[in-house]
Image 1 (cartoon, rainbow, N blue to C red):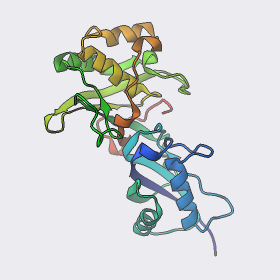
Image 2 (cartoon, rainbow, N blue to C red; image 1 turned 90 degrees about the vertical axis):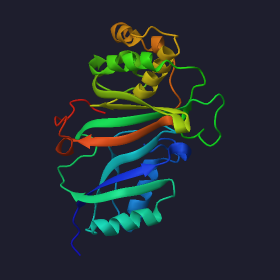
Image 3 (cartoon, rainbow, N blue to C red; image 1 turned 30 degrees about the horizontal axis):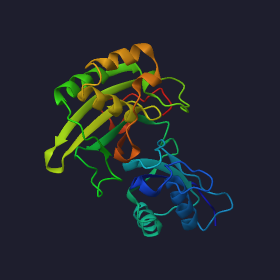
Image 4 (cartoon, one colour; image 1 turned 90 degrees about the horizontal axis):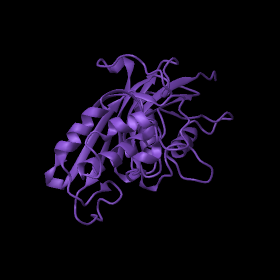
Length: 268
């Protein structure tokens, strides 16, 4: 039997509650680790283990609605059969939504042109036990007009040094945000943010959300984000919103992202 190498692109969702993030870590349960285990089982545990390459990392407790990864498989299986095999073997907190055979030129990480994140905040006076793994929480009153002004200050290309946690391996802290919006879901008593940009730094979205709720609560000037750009001091941003409210909503690639077709020049 002549073995060939077939590259598969998968889009998948996961509940991050019981994972120590996406990336493989020794002696920890991770999303990448679970998928790697199953893919190698489907390939009958080849002598050269198959590696899974994701579009980027997510932290412990963070969720994904549409994470993307690729892997090179030692023989060809029809996409629909790979789809069924993965979903029949993966744990219940991961589900594959789509499988495609792609060119060897495709790279789940380096071909990314943008990402979209959502952050959910429960606005109840006390934390809802049924939301505690899926939302952040803020009990204070928020001025949504101030938050809208602050969101406008995020649009464009900026140096986000004040919004990146220590431990970042990024070569540059300059990123472009194309969209920054909020939606008040009154029926569920939630505030939902969405951020779409060419890339996001380590904990960047969670730090931005922490600043936004402080602006909405009157603890900061409405244009304080502009000051934070200038001073480049992470300690001045203070709060980091909890990971439970964060969702990777979409990963864009240049061939499917007509609004912003140019591939990001930053490692993300």
